[in-house]
Length: 164
Image 1 (cartoon, rainbow, N blue to C red):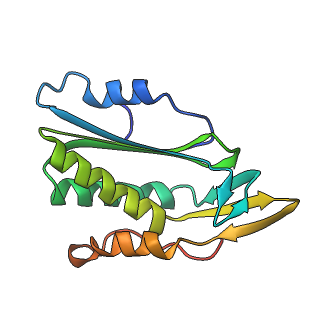
Image 2: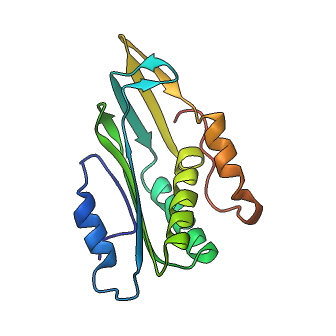
């Protein structure tokens, strides 16, 4: 079985990752996945490219802690997070979250919990390029509001802010 967290520049094969996570686990009755892709627009502005940065080691450790938190909060069997870094173009896959459990409800909740964390707290820094200029992108207020519902029981993870 592969690692629970992978931060990588290369693309990922969704089907292979799902098969690997659920391989030989006859308890699995539900698999929930989220695939995030690079859009060509953000906040009404055109986006021609994106670049993601992270702190190697720290990012993986922070996401591992959130997977541990998801396992404690929800009745799930396994989880995997793959997040790409480096230069990306519109239509590129950027993030994959996979969760397995006996039933769909726990998988859906855990997948959403992990994605909300990745959007607001994971130590990534995103720069978008458009029309010859680039800008660092902060988490949206709506992402923060979505993540706030999970805060009652968790202090795990790191807080991302600004750029490295």
